[in-house]
Image (tube, rainbow, N blue to C red; front, side):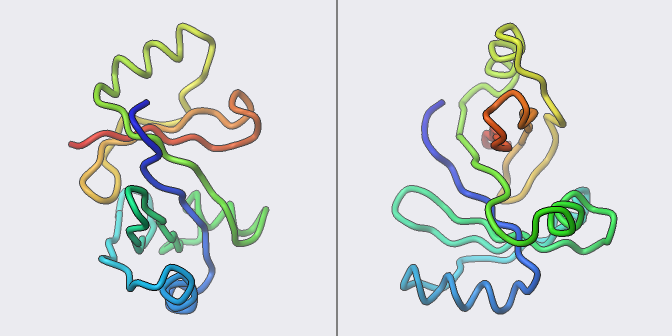
Amino acid sequence: MKKLEHIGIAVEDLDAAERIFGDVLGTPSYKREEVAGESVLTCFFQSGESKIELLVPTSPDSAIAKHLERRGPGLHHVAFYVEDLPAELNRLQDLGYRVVTGPKPGADGKTIAFLHPSDTGKVLVELCTNS
């Protein structure tokens, strides 16, 4: 793991959340991006070396829509940057961690994979690398 890449936050109203985090961080978002394969619209903020990713569903059957239905808005995942995603996934799987999904294309030009939250202290962990 090279660094904390971003923290993903599920939101119900992207415009309102974008305003709130722009106020809190003192800077506007640097981009919005739709990830069609995940049925999600994202919004990114840069905060020092790390990023905040806001996520809103674009489909009622998306993972983010289901998360909002079960848990409401708030923390969705913590993402770590890795240089060699396949090697890191192999290392973690050898240690008994399960991959929920990925590797696959993600937002912000990254290739991503998620570890099962039951294996990671109930925190959804994303691993990402540059595509």
